[in-house]
Length: 491
Ligand code: ADP
Image 1 (cartoon, rainbow, N blue to C red):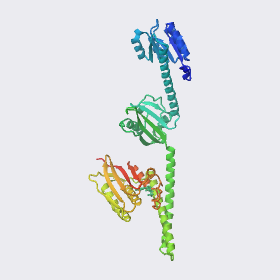
Image 2 (image 1 turned 135 degrees about the vertical axis):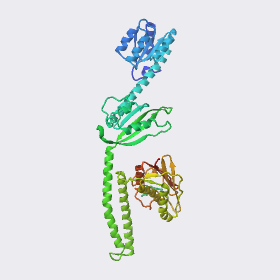
Image 3 (image 1 turned 60 degrees about the vertical axis):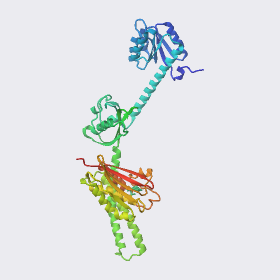
Image 4 (image 1 turned 90 degrees about the vertical axis):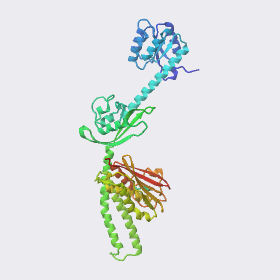
């Protein structure tokens, strides 16, 4: 036996039939009651309105042609007091234009008289589907709202005119908005943090074919009643199916505590490295005194052991120095005394400097100067450190007879410095981690190559402090390419 329409729902929908013709009222009642609905009826527009005022009906079957109050007068009343009620108008043949008018007033469908029980069932089942979809959407919406309101991250969405369509309490707290409701208001009317506003504007005007998000760290300095805070802000456009931007979404994540811990850690690391360096240097000196025979005769075996010990201590001193460098860069103490740099010269100097160590492994270093290269305003020592680190790595992680190519080129507002080698290369998993502190690739080929795992993190920090970026490409056995992008001075 086929299931009745109401049994397919997990509630009993209520239907009201408003018609002055008894035959229609009774007919509808019989058919729909059999289908498991709760059916009420009214024989006039007035009675119908009274019943609607008293209770909610899921569906109203409404005759348009009734004496006194017509269906067209009842319809707007229903729609304004019960917007979720689905209205199906019952029309005579002669009243097609009325049914069109009724649709304009918000009727869901119409059914012309006379109609068969089957026709009635089809329209009602369509209406039920519709109410169910509406209820699902409403449920989903309230679930989403509940979820977003409970998030500890701040979330705000706007339409394409940057008017707010959603903003959760965490967002309001982070931007320190204590005023009234903001839904429907332009974002700039209540967001006072210019960096956040700029991000939203930028996300809104991102070209339709780019799928990026903007990420920035925002420091709120506690002025104008905002709390002192560090926020990680993400802003992105959201688009409809045709790719047209229909709004923006911004998420703020409070990273104040993380930043504090990070600073404590940097301070600690820099203190320890500093304190460790001098005693280690003095141990080195003392070892040298013994090795030089100034404290008495030393056997060949003893010299060998002391030599190994010195090498180990040397690499510890190196690590302590690199940790100090990193801590300095992180604390913002990096010497950003900038000067204008001609990269053709800097790269050629670096090539010359590394030729000897490369030659020891029969590695060639090639560089062809670029023509029309603009000058770059940067810290010379830092830039030398970046290039030197990359060339040193290229030599270290290449087998005998490999080749290193240096290049510099202009890419829009950036100068691109490339260091390419034909060395060991590395896997994608390793490539993703080489800029992490202390990360070193561990395999049979790299086992005997010494290092601290701090070179690339230092390079990355320096590049970032110069508003640049660094990218790496690599394939095991094929070699690696590192590209550094530094903004150049625009006249
Ligand atoms: P270190 O060289 O002291 O170990 P780095 O931070 O400079 O530290 O490099 C991290 C790791 O990345 C290295 O241990 C090495 O495995 C890998 N690496 C860096 N440069 C290259 C390169 N040019 N070719 C292959 N592997 C590289």
